[in-house]
Structure formats: C-alpha cells, structure tokens
Amino acid sequence: MTASRRAGAGVLDTPFGSVRGVLFDIDDTLVDLEFSMTTALREVSEHLLPGMDQAGWERFGRIFTHETTHYYDRYLAGELTFNEQRLLRGRAALGHFGVELEEGEQSHQWLTAYVEKQPAYVKPFPDVMPLLDLLDQAGVPYGAVSNNVHDYQRAKLDGAGLGRVRRLVGTDTLGVAKPDPSIYLEGVRLLGTGPAETLYVGDNRLLDAEGSTAAGLLGVWLNRAGEQVKEFRGNMVSSLGELVACGRAARAGRTPGPRPRPARRSPICASTKSRVK
Image (cartoon, rainbow, N blue to C red):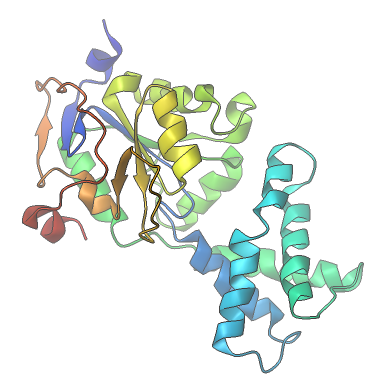
C-alpha cells in the first residue's frame, strides 16, 4: 500500500498541482508573530523610551524582529537558550535608541514581562481558518513543521485557537532544523502522504519554499509583504487563499495530477478571493 493510499482521504487542487496533504510553517505563516512581538515589546519598553513616536516604535520592532535574527540562528545552533537570544535582541533594539538594559534585575524584569505578555497577542491570520475549514471538508490532512521546539509551538498553536493543527514537528523532534530535509519528511510521514503529493507553505523563501522543494515536497513561498526577489523562480502566493485553485477540492478517489513546472506566482480567481480571505 502506497503512502498516498494510506492517507487517501481527499485531494486539494492548487494552482501548482493537486496534493493529498499540506504542511505549514507556523510563525508569520499561520500566526502573526511579528505583531505579537512588536506589541508586547512596546508594552514592556515604553517606560524606558518615553516620548518615542510611532516611527521610532516601528524601527524598534524592526530591529528586534528582522535585524537581530543572527541571535536566533545561534539558538538553533545550541549556543544560546531561547530566552538568552530574546534578551540579546531586546538589548540591541534598546541600545539603538541609547538605552542600556542593565545586567541583573532590570534585564530579568524586562524579559519576564515580555515572556508573560507576548503569548496573549498571538493570533492567526484571517486567511488561516477558512483554508483549514476547506481542508477539513475535503478530508485533506495537514500539519506544521517549525524551526522551534515542539512543546513551545504546541502551546502557541493551542493559545491561538489552532489546536486543530494536531500534527506538529519541531526542531527537537529529530534534533534538526530547516532546511535539513529530514524535518520536512517527518511532517510528510505524520500526514501519511508522499513528498511529491504534499504541499509545504511558509513565509521564509529559503527555509520554507526552497528548503521543502529540495526535500521533494511542493514548496510554496508565502510572500505576504510582496517582496521582490528577481532570482526566485519557484512557487509563490501572497495569501493562503491563493493556494486554492478556484476553490476546488475533491474527496477520495481523485489522483493527484502531475507536478507542473514551477510558477512564479499563483493565478487569482474570483472564487478564491471570496471563499478564503
């Protein structure tokens, strides 16, 4: 019995081909992590930066979320703990505005406040639930593969109202992180599908789209910000709604079609825009 027949509940038509399973990245794909981080950061840092204007807070958030990710890479490499990299990123953002977060009690209080407040702001993007509803209706299994540890991401999904995403692979599941092929293939195994009939979508072009494609999956870059990358020739959507090929999904009995040549961008049709926003 093949992997696809074991999964076999249904088939989803996408602009990039028909698939029997879908895997998602989590942060800034299913949930708006950047919003949760920047909102909590401002709340715990306003007393240190009184009078900061909106442009300043946007710059502050940008430094923490985008310009200090090398600290997160060190966490993935085992050089820092998760909270150590958070603190270093916070210090870098505050330091840009001339505020030095002191060692000891001040740093502990800042980090503790951030850790307590940030989860409350984690919410799914508006296009997530409609797509999951469609996958459930079609009998297409889905799950998530994340570059963070399983239990932390499990709590994040549950807290965001995404407990229905039951299949989850974290960096501690196999002891590897994206783009190691085995982390994507473990997600495929949990779905019971085959790599070529499994779509993987995430907001990171390199780790999600290109990494999963190299592992044999149908990788798609979720480019919510509309970033222009001329050298990218893979599959790309600007919202999860665009994954649905004119709203078509079929139950068991369909055979996934051959993988088409990679498309630069998905076509958008009226039924997609109305069904999944």
